[in-house]
Image 1: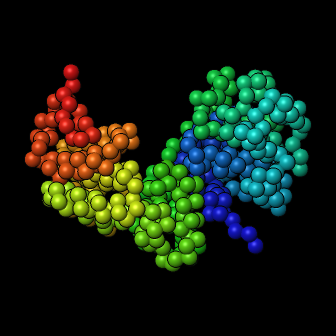
Image 2: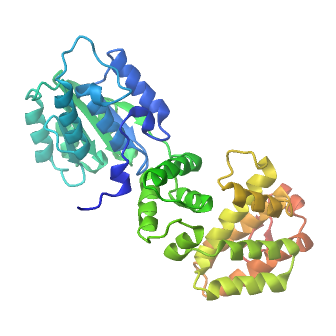
Image 3: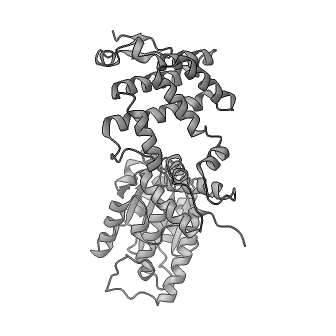
Amino acid sequence: MSYTVLARRYRSQRFDAVVGQHAVAQTLINAIKTGRVAHAYLFTGTRGVGKTSMARLFARALNAPDTVEDAPKDEHFEYPEPDVQQRMADAIMRGDDLNVIEIDGASNRGVDDARDIIAKAGLSPTANARFKVYIIDEVHMLTREAFNALLKVMEEPPAHVKFILCTTEPQKVPATIQSRCQRFDFHNIPTPQIAEHLRDVLKNEDIEAEDEAVWQVARLGNGSMRDALSLMDRLLATGDNPLTAKTLEDMLGLPDAELIASLVDAIAEGSVKDTLERTGDLLNRGLGQDQLVDVLIERFRQLMLLAACGGDSELIELSEDAKAKAEQQASRFDAAGLVYNLALLESLSRNGKASSTPRALLDAAMVRLALAEKMADVSALLAAGGAVSAGGAVQKKK
């Protein structure tokens, strides 16, 4: 039997299971309940945040409401028998239902494709379904001619037709199309919610995992549930049980968390020798300079948030164990000093790519980080609006 990836196997089966999109889900439920279902919707948001899952659920709720646990029903419409609804629902989730037509805008983007939609839209739905629903994914890829062809049918479609347009780039959808749709913006999913969902998935898969590994996968998802689940699939393929942060680091080539913590400790101690040696050790282990800078930026960001907001803040995206260690490190810096460190690293990230001697800039920046308290009054520097160069020099605004 072929393997089904986690992102497909754990696709949401009810509205409240679409993680991080409660407001959108509740609005769509209320629209069905009150009989105010619009003829066209525009779902926007980055990849993997639930646009297509919500579109399919909405289509199921319209044609097969008995199969969606939290979907309301129109008491004035006679729906098919429950077993027929279930077959319809299964086909909708697979993407091959005759009444819920999914179209990839990237590969069906021409005017002829749009005319085909228009021609078939007039046909009544089959199998006693209530609506014919067109889900057009990546709709921004349609040509101008295709959009123009869709305008009329989207403005005054047959009563049995609904359109759900999904896109990651709403600015590329013509205003004439957007004005004919109800728009819903799907937001990036917070890391804690992704982590909670990953724990549920691992529990169902009978896999144990370190909390730090789950949090790392959730953070690496960058707000996308699909990306996080895809990464978890790769982690499961290692065959390890329990899954550990070390497994994830080895698989992705991430730096050892202990070595990064050791480098930050050396910076906090103001030890130039230890700072440079630990930087060199990380690079000798195969870590790229750009990756090291990115990791340090994220580390100092978390320390800054801890110093400024405290460990109870929802902004802190760390496991409990990692948070306790980070709080100890954060106590060795002040918020202004951490802001300075971030500014220095950000400047290094930009200028290091264009330099013919990036290692020299890196070493200079590491020395600057270690000697920050001795070389500059950080609070005065920030208050004066100074800029920090890649080498750490202060540049006053003119």
